[in-house]
Length: 507
Image (cartoon, rainbow, N blue to C red; front, side, top):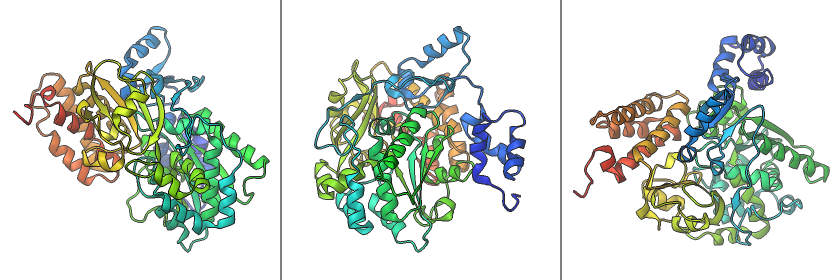
């Protein structure tokens, strides 16, 4: 039972200040915050970076890094006597095989980008804008006009869900509660995805301006920036941009800015799990409804947007919603696509929404080897075969193909890849990152991982019930993690049945 007056929101910050869950730390945080020691311990063990602070160098075992021989990297570290451990995707897929040393953060590579273009809403290759023209316009025309421009633009959430942004913004504006919050979701953890990292590093003022517009339009008094814990340089770039904008008099002094580190939990990319983390709890998704626009941070109306979505706002307001809608090919706007795996130039490429996979491959320098498969939207999107190169990379077309655009983290696989192994890599990720709250996800990810292991060990019937387990996960899991966690396996079984001991559907 938590006593009245306990300062729960301080728990994660204090654990971080003390270097994670070391001996005696849970008790210290209990005494400082009033949160029960067992509760503090339970929170700390939920987050990888806090639960195992002395793990040493963390070696990424995401799909792109596996393709680039992260096993060899780990073996070299072992041979050198360097303490290390495998970890989930580090958001450095363009640098595969990637690693992260918390004591000596490696520099981020000079990422390949698409050339600057007037048709790009974000335009990573362009100089960062410090004029804050969109914020000036928003102040002149008001919050209702801002929401109407977003509606005209057709911009949808670029974090994965593809939900219309204007509905979220209007939802917060329409609440009677006057205490409101804006939250930036920069906890980029989807394997194959590193676009938000580049947006903040290259165009931080674009992000700050978009957040300032949101705070003004929604009459929010606080902006919270939740940044992935392994992205130290990213957080520093964002904080510097806020300081520069304040010094230039661009920001409203009445709005308070907060910068919060993530602590290594993929599930906190889910908006309600992120809110739980902000409140000092284990990052477990909430049941919806109520939605965050009504009951969000501290139970108040809250707008939560992905970095890429927020970064689109300034160009929408300065160039018009109709302009943004027109630059898309099959759906509104331009989109950032991450390309990694077996490609010549891994990087972030901005293109019209609905660009074909074939065109993206050409931008990224083509396939190294012969194309076999690709994961179009991160681990959650499963796999599609080379025959689908003509598919429009948008929410609608990929959804109709039984996949998803998600965060547009494209991983390319050539014909050297064993699809059983590729599916296993993704299942290991989802089992490790399941928050464990709901049984379909917690148990289902374990069962499918174990079934793949048995199949690889020679048990021909190990996968006979895989589709039934996958169905239960998709129908009964609380959040998108469990609902999509089986897709890498079921899609691989669908398109490459012979590799799973099944006959092709046409035979």
